Image (cartoon, rainbow, N blue to C red; front, side, top):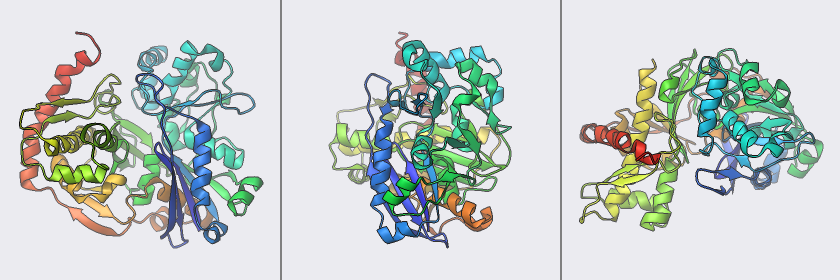
Length: 484
């Protein structure tokens, strides 16, 4: 069997695959996010490790004993700062933290070739500007930094004693030369760091070390190989069989992602499009990212509508009969296409007759239109998307699927295990490494269980609403920043 571990934002997931690639078992342990100040988002790395152990030990002992390899995936961009003894210096600053906007401009000014090197605009969620913020505001901590690891790679360190990173996750740091798949000394110098602070780079299906003896004993396993794995979305793509040029999926997790695999690097930094290495050799991907997808539904369920959970919100939205307001889903700023950490959530167009069902529907529609903005940046950048496989927790709702298919005007494909995601892909990468299996054999698309075609009436509805949705951001942009 092969174990995949996904160090997510809301929890750590462990998934076990049989040698034939079928899912055997999975378990999850929850995580919390700390927001100590406006636009701040942090987690204690010790919580990642505790949740990892809890998730793994929740799997059946006889299955754990049969594990032959482990892959790791996880949330991207998080800055885990270690001293010379590998002690954590402060809580990790996460991907949806927006405090370092000023440092983004400073980094691009310090290295004018930055967009050419990293194939992306420097954004507040990425890792490098976080280090500049720490250097400016917490100098005593910055001076002690000897290593910077991404979240899953800190967990790897505790698993194996090695500091390693895959190409896909490294692409989101602003320190990787994405075309050449190597650390950029120019970008590190611009951040005040050196190559010595970086983990060793590996392709996603390469072995980075073995499970430490004490961890293996505690987990009831042999000292099995641990492979590089991937950033969460690249690993999810491997799990979904999105491994060939033009293959695509949409992720409906905390964040919302449209991901397209490419056989060459296709960048569009001016529109906030991410162009990263894939978790597989000689492959890249384009990725649009909205920061609050399922997070918007969760927020509205808890804080606005008082529904029991997100599925209850979706049921409420399905009961809507009146005109839905507009919802801008920018609760923690936005990446694609605005690259604006100051963007805020907005409900616009409330009327006396607006009820809870209409507000619920507006939340779902706002997320769908935000994802359409992202898809359009991808097609503008040279990729053609024929269909989208659906991944993430939102993949369980066919009602949401009808809304999304109409807003995106693209067929959605639902596959078995679509909610397992990165952990499944990480396990596949481990299988490839240990079995020596080629990509085509190890990464077939999972069984298709449903297809949602765009309904003409819903397509037409969103064609009428999308321009106003976009105009609201433009009209409010200066207000978000307090400029007027």
